[in-house]
Amino acid sequence: MDYLVLAVRFLTIVPVPGREGTGLGALGRAAWWFPAVGVGLGACLVAADHVFALLFPPLLGSILVIGLWKVLTGGIHLDGLADVFDGLAGRDAERRLAIMRDSRIGVFGATALVLCLLILTGALDALPAVRRPAILLLAPAVGRLAPLLIGPLFPAATPGQGAGAAFLDGLSPWAAPVSVAGLWILATALLGPWGGLLVSFALGSVLLWAVFVASRLGGLTGDALGSSVEVCELATLVAAAALTHLRVI
Image (cartoon, rainbow, N blue to C red; front, side):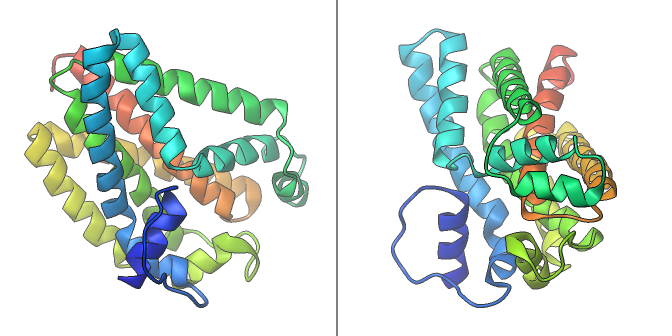
């Protein structure tokens, strides 16, 4: 349970008692719990969405759900997304990594944050009430599967340096296949056969994102891994909104 405590403390601002796993690669070993923490986060969002639907009009309720979502995670992955977009403006890999290490946010990062939050809110607001609980339960879990999926496929951009390299060192190559299978089963149970398509689209999107980012940085960093969570969550909600608009699910 030490690694579950570490996973909850790293991925959320929820204070949990107990001793967390420590040592080199501890976060990578805790990654087995990432999708489960995502399901727990999703359950909180489902409950909050139900309360907000009783108290507020639909659009305001969607804004509050997205706001709560990002507050509960401490904005950790939004920070990674902003850093990556700022860094991608650099002229070469070395300069891009240097920009990403700068704590200040630039225009590309700020624009990425605004667009991400707007698209998330619009996609959630477009979902019919009957589908919102399933999507809100799935999206955080699928998002937290993203680092497990792309981690074993790409090298660290700065080997032996930073949280990203330490995460990759401790990450098991079996974590992703096991978690994908589990989330496929959950998605199918919630949404029928199209649930698997939804998960596949989200994971396919994050793989393309990882290929692009790794090609620009020479590998993955902690910020790149964090950004993959946001990209995967965004892809899940956008795909769900499209499928419901087309009356597929």
